[in-house]
Length: 208
Image (cartoon, one colour):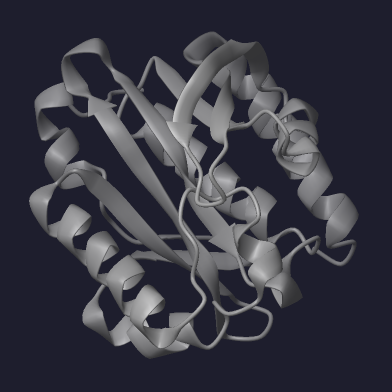
């Protein structure tokens, strides 16, 4: 299997990704209102580094995603649930260390109606598959709030390796400083993680 040179990451990181369950497409202005419709349940933002409580908050949040996409700081994806045809949330590639063939998958959130239905797993499957099998990444990393038991369990369930805690990593909106816990998947581990994601997805979607 041949991979794109790391020098092509800025072009290859942002593209259409899809399977029969979900579509991930690069963010554009046309995604603003579909995303706004699902963004105002505060349960989404409990462990996020920002809050979306008003239309102004949302527009600031969305404009930042557009700016990061435009500058190449992140490759921001909009997640569409194919079973309903509705916008489900967002995820991103970031911290693109091209020379080291390392990147992060994060900035991920889903509307509450799409949680626990396999959407997140299929999105991670597509992002990991593209990173390892097209971009030629050697390491994909994730980080989350050490208090976010659901996200930590989800990462362990797919086979991501728990690496350790970065203490007092960043401030949170409620005033505390977050301890961030890191997870990773390496190229050699991808085949087993790929199989695990497939099994978990089919368990959630038994007709798939």
